[in-house]
Length: 333
Image (tube, rainbow, N blue to C red; front, side):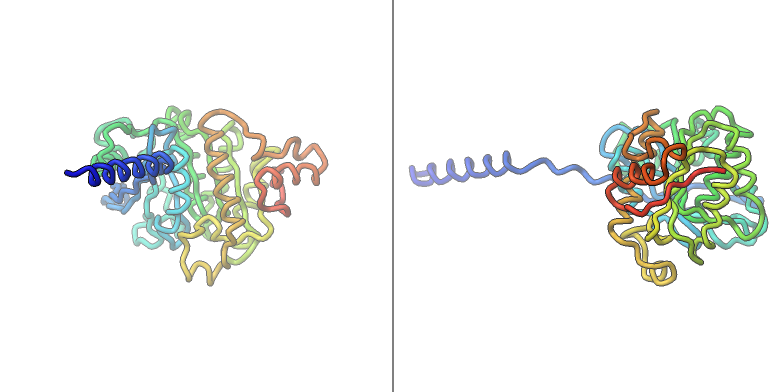
C-alpha cells in the first residue's frame, strides 16, 4: 500500500469514528413474540393465540392487556409496545367473541367458567406446568432472552369488553386466590363496556369496592360503541372512591387501539385523534408504573378532587397530561 492509500485509509477510518461517536445509540424495540396459551373451557382445551411483548431490559412487572369485543390482540399492539418500552412484560391474548361452549370474552350466556380458568393462569403461574408460564417460556426461548423471568407482580388492563373481563378476573383472585390477588397491583380500564347479559361487572365491582386495589378508568364520550358509557357509569355507581380517572370529551371508543385500529373500528366508532391517543397511552402506562412502584406521580391525578373546586381539579389533570383540556374528572358515588 502506497503513502496516498495509507492517508486515504486513515482519513476514512477517522471519519467513520467521528460519525459513530456522533450517532446516538438506538433504543431497541420491544420484542413481540407470537405464541399460544391453553385455557380450559367446556370440557376441552382452547389453544388461543397470544402475543408477548418483552422489554429491552429487566422487567418491572407483568401487564395483562385485553382487547375488546370482536377485536383481536393485534388491535392493541401499539399500546402493548408502549408498556413494553416502559419496561414491562405484556401478555396480550386473543379471546373469542363467539363460542358454543361460552368460552368468550364477553358474557353471551355464562362465560364465568372461562374467566375463572383465566384467573387460574395467574394464580398458578409459578408452577412449571402452568400454561401461562409455558407460553412465556416459549416466547423468551424464541427471542433468545434467557435473562427474563415471568414477573410476579401484575397489572390488568382491559379495553371495552376486555374491561369487564379484567374486572371479573380480579374479583376471582380476590375471592379464591388471595396470594395472587396480593400480587395484583392495580387495574386500568379503557372505556369499559358491560355485557348485555349477566352481572359480571356488578359482581366484580361490588366485591372490589371493599378492597384497596387501585382501579382507574379512561373513558370516551358516550356512544353506541361503548353502550352509551354504561361500563363507566357502573364503575362510578359501585366504587365509592374519590378519583376514578377521566372522561375525554372528544374521545372515541377506539382511542385505546390508536394506530393498531382498523377501518371498520374507525368507521363504526370514530377516528381517534393523535392527541387523545397520546393522552390515553401516557395515563395508562403512567398509572401502571405508579401501581407497580407504589408511587403517585402528581401529573396523573387531580390534587384534591372531588373536595376541591371541580375546575381546579380538572385543570390539575389536563395540565399534567397536556392533551385533553376538557377532560371530566370521574368520581365514585
